[in-house]
Image (cartoon, rainbow, N blue to C red; front, side, top):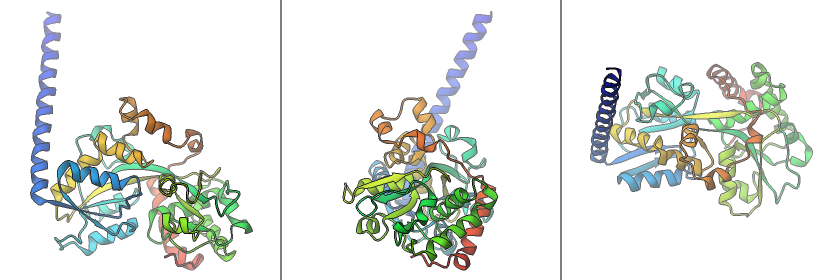
Length: 367
């Protein structure tokens, strides 16, 4: 009798799994049809060199045949939120369907009614700590704050944040964004402050502002948004940026100039970015299909090709989905041992302090 019951249970489970798989396939087919009927998707703030977004976008277009409108690739997280607000009644290509923003912007956008819920088919493999339980936002990738160094102009690379104050780095240090609006730049200010405050998160924002005030008064700070072009030109020889951006920019220059990426010995801050769909998306089905692609194995490995650790990294690695050649290209794990992941409350606090006080404390207009 027991064997018969076990056989019956096993058969029922197999039937349920098969039925679920068929239902998911049917739902995906319906989503693809609806997205193709809309015909296009509008993204914002996705530079092609950031996390291999160029390759990811091309992969999505090739797979589903949709047109992708790309708005302001150099926009910051705050700009993305403002773009949703400004285009609530706009159904044209000026209105973003999807956003990719710093973690702290997810809950605030949800509270303001600016994003809508959607749970991708791989939802269960996204860590609970990196997603909204109701599906309004979900982590996509993460990295640590690092220093990209132009070896043609900097003979001995800084090893820590404090080194940036040295006179030999006059007119060399830049942020990869405007700290009044860009999450990447805000995170760099916080990281420098965390090092200056000896790891005390409660004092890091104020310490970071003081650090950059000193850096600016000494003439070491360059108020230019750091990225690949000014780095290659020598305008911004040292850029504080997420490690994946730093490596991608350096690699893209193919040795001209030679570069080094330094993970500071202190103040190693990790940052998670999140995806969300605009509550006013003109192409909601295309937006959902975009999310399905991003969180598929293909999309996640696409990000990893750009040196970003995708949020499903552990799941992919456990199941042997990551090519060894790609794993070998990633930075050594030792540099990440001291990484700290600020909580949402900590992020909200330091973001508010840094964005609101940058002008009055530092007084550098980053452009």
